[in-house]
Structure formats: structure tokens, C-alpha cells
Length: 185
Image (cartoon, rainbow, N blue to C red; front, side, top):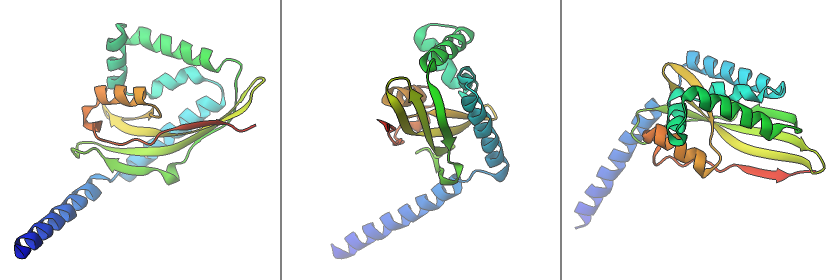
């Protein structure tokens, strides 16, 4: 029985080592794609710092937009208009004091089925709220490639993760970090 147990442990270790090797290989993002992601982050950062929150819709992947539109029974064009308007209304009167994504601290991973490599980028923001002080938010932004282009998706709550998984079932089983928000002044 001991030999059988040792064989089972050895087989499990071998399989684990093999799967680690596969995952490490799958967790590569080519330098050209990294450059594109950096460019997308810079464009998003510039839009946020300039108060052009309505442009955030342009960073959402098309498949996710289609799922969202179908869920609420709207055309994609109408959904984009509504989401952009809601985003603008949500930040009306607020001032973005800082915003950034830390690409140097990003984690590259693969979905459980190894079909998609993605990046989780630590993201922070500080906004000033009239008569309430400053609010700091720490979240993660998901960078994923769809239809040949890299997109950025905020994933700090269960509803966002559920929509993501509805559009991209390969993310089922991926544990995403929770976001946090706190008043700091």
C-alpha cells in the first residue's frame, strides 16, 4: 500500500509539474501586446484625468457589450449612449484627484481551460466628494484581448464578474480580487 501511495503522490506531483509548465507557457503576453496594453492604459488614464468619463465605454470589449445589451434589451449603440450618460452623471460634481493603473505590479494568468491569457492590473483612484472628503478606491482592472484588440474591464464586484463570465465563460473558476473603497479625509 505504501508503494501505491508513493506512486499516486509521484503521479500527482508529475501532473502538477506538467500543468505548471503549461500554465507558465500560457501566461506569456508578447512584448508587442504589452506595448498595446500600455497604450490603452495611457489613453484610459488621459480620459479619466481630463474628466472624459464617457470615453470609458470605448475600453469595454465588444462581446461584453453585446451581453450587456441583450440583458437589458437594448441595441449596442443605445446601451453605449446610456452607459456613457450614466457614467457622466455618476461623477458630476466629483473631482478626480488621482487615477492610475500599475502595470509593473500586474499579474499575468490564464483561464482554467488555458484558452485565454489575461492580465490583472492594480488600479487606484482618489476622488474629492463635495461635503464628504476624499474617497480612495483600490480595484483591479482586467486586460483581455478580444477580436484582435486589448480591452480594459473593471472587475471589483460580483455583478461585474457575473457579466464578464456570461460573455466569457472561460473565466468561470477564476478568483478575482475584491475592490475596496474608503473615505480618507
